Image (cartoon, rainbow over all chains, first blue to last red; front, side, top):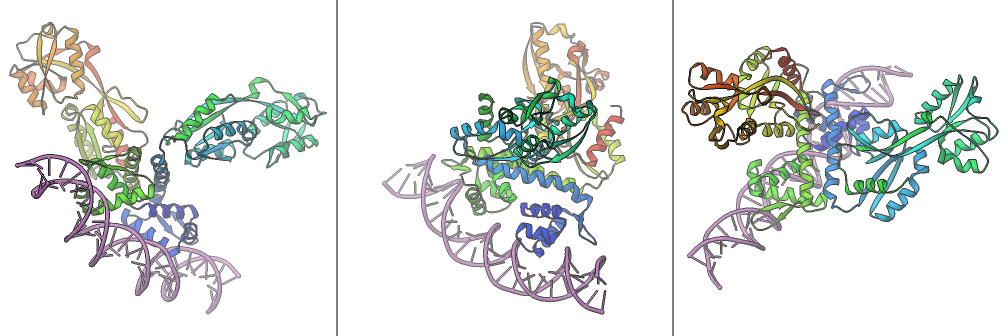
Length: 287
Length: 287
DNA sequence: AATATCAAATCATTTTCCATGATGGTCGAC
DNA sequence: GTCGACCATCATGGAAAATGATTTGATATT
């Protein structure tokens, strides 16, 4: 079995087309066909059903796919492990919620980057669910996500606890005003972790929600300031806007408000020196 | 990175010689040299120190080796997973203590083999520690080992509890006779799991041990019968010899005597249909 | 010091393998 | 029917791998 064959297999499974897999891999269709056929011959069974309108994985192919993924991840890590010479260098891929990125990371990354200039930091933002997928797939080394983390293949540590607050236009009253109303709420992304909390809270007060999705935090706050709706964000993100008098902040009952942020990583993944250093850097810094 | 390169790397690391690695792989030395050099060039660092009297792994090579092993295991399992069509067939590799193999397995294997004739059973015997290594390395699918099992990468289930008994020549008295004596004991292998118990027991009575190592259970029992020393084995193994009047069996206090035998497997390993069937077969059978 | 020995590196040659582009076949849409 | 999309097949040039012979280097032996 050849690693190139496995990569080809993954590409075909992903695109469900040999032709598209070929261009994804930067090669020609006949090459893909040949590799797949050879792989099938070697393994002694069909991996794809060639049918009308594209090709689909056979049961055997379905069983092989997760192994192909795991092997690909492992091969990538093998190279990283070998290259790691005990000094913190190379890439360090972080994942984070947009709010965490805006609120907590700038100072942290600046000091870490100053301490370890040889590390290439990169940050990917997304919802908690997306980040966990990325960690599991090995696309990011570490991710900051709000609890809870399920699954024993991941290892996590609470690094900071955010206080979520309700954010309204400056003239609105607090939580009580939610009762019975039909309120427009503004969220960052559809899968946003804070959204569920906001929905629960509003529902508990007898209100109901309409949701608007935004791409940026400033966009949300700007619209709240303009009276378009309400939102729920960490206190630190909203405070500058409050001080400017553009929005009002309303504290929530602690049971609803406190969200621990975990720094999570794959348990069986390779912990590069850069990862190790970052973990202790986070532990030493007070976020 | 090529899988063949990784295989040659493993072979060289294992044999600590390119020449011997070559013959292990069925190729020529120059080929091995070239592959290693190419691998080193691609990964950007030396894997071996070519020094006086053979070659040794560099730190980078040491870091790479466990990945090479894991990838090799995974590739093997990938093939098995793909081939598995839901019927129990193909190889099923079991590990067991010699005593368990003699006492518990014959009936079990006979009935399983009759129920699933397409499964190729093979058994490897060794000490508990050796068996756990074999399970972790993927050399065996399932192993029968005495407790305790440590590590959360393994999954185990108690399948039977053995009663260990003290075995002496027919004319000897029981445990009390150990006090203050210097006794020759007979064990199967140096790392034998029962040995530690025997030592503890004798030490508690104020005796001390000299150990003789044997290759077979019958060898041990024969020597005990001949008055050469004492041993400790599961009751079932010794009973035929007792009935023949050749040895005496002395029960031990239950706290020392009862040893649960676990059936253990890798948690993240691929459970072939044959493995699944064997597990339920064991659960159904009364050992 | 000369040399025998052993293992790895190097080199030239043969062989194998692979990517490519062209072509053919099949199925569905129009 | 014909066109378009898609995969299979085939021949070929080129690249990479395996091979056997040779060289280099280190070590032990006398």
